[in-house]
Amino acid sequence: MILDGQSSQAIAAAAQALQRGELVGLPTETVYGLAADAGNDAAVAKIFEAKGRPANHPLIVHVASAQGVARFASHVPDFAQKLIDAFWPGPLTLILPRRPDLAAVAAGGQNSVGLRCPSHPTAHAVLQSAETLGVLGVAAPSANLFGRVSPTTAAHVAGEFGESLLIVDGGACDVGIESTIVDCTRGAPVLLRPGVLTPQQLRAVCGVDVVVPVAVDADAPRASGTLASHYAPSAQVLLLDATQMQAALNQLAATAPEPTRVALWSREPLQIHPALAARVVSCAMPKDPAACAHDLFAQLRDFDQQGVTQIWVERPPLAPEWDGVLDRLTRAATPAG
Image 1 (tube, one colour):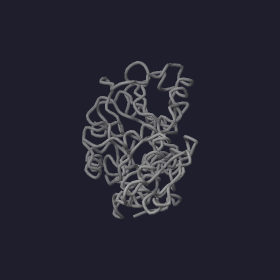
Image 2 (spheres, helix red, strand yellow):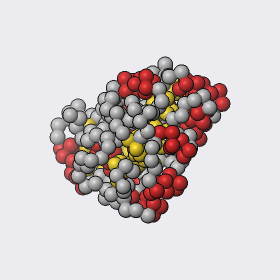
Image 3 (cartoon, rainbow, N blue to C red):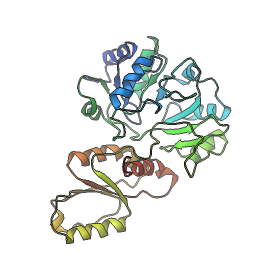
Image 4 (cartoon, rainbow, N blue to C red):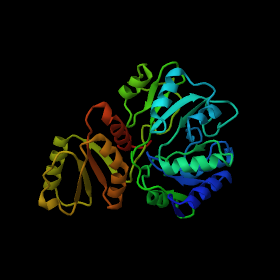
């Protein structure tokens, strides 16, 4: 059931559902979340079951304001508080030491917890309304089956879980990819997942260099969306540079017709042979990183709906402002298992 997020009745219905221990499809500025009362372990367990998500893979807890941090975190370092002051509400998740009496299931059994205050007005309204009913925070991973493409519209969520789920429609997500995640449990900020906020932006605010691991960080707490294979559509994703894409297209045109249907998402114009008209669909990839992030998941879903078997994507530039998009595409292109 999709409810209009502009309606006060919808906000109240969502808050009441959360209080009852039910799941709710919740819009945020990043992606839509599958939400449950973070303090209700049985409700949170429903998220893992519905998504098919391993129970040790932690969830992010969303709070209505910065004041909600103290309810879940036992300590907030000075640099973390500066990040909160600068970027909340917004697309930034901070991993903090967890109070032992709350959100153990949401945290995947870890002694830390990921916290975020979303800026989407509908999410904020639901969180505020739920807070008055005793729901102190809401665990909400992306509202899709585990490992699949994240949803950025209410219709995407309904396509994943059906009409029986209460979904609050807040329109298309403004950001389009998940939040930047920063670990604040080890004395200095450590980037665990890139997003639209870059390490340079974070450092400018907190005054501390943000550690960007160049290899697997064995000491890092587990965090959402950091598995090697994730965000994957049904079609196979291939990351190529523009020259490689053109060469592959030329090769495809030279081969006998076959059932392979290919989608192209590129910033550079490509020459498509007329013989490929029935086998290739093409869409321009935005040259602006924020616009590309906004379109990314919706575009992958659209290509899937068109029945392609492969999606060829032009590799994003190696620049901090593109790291979030590159991260999602790299994981989408990595085979599961």
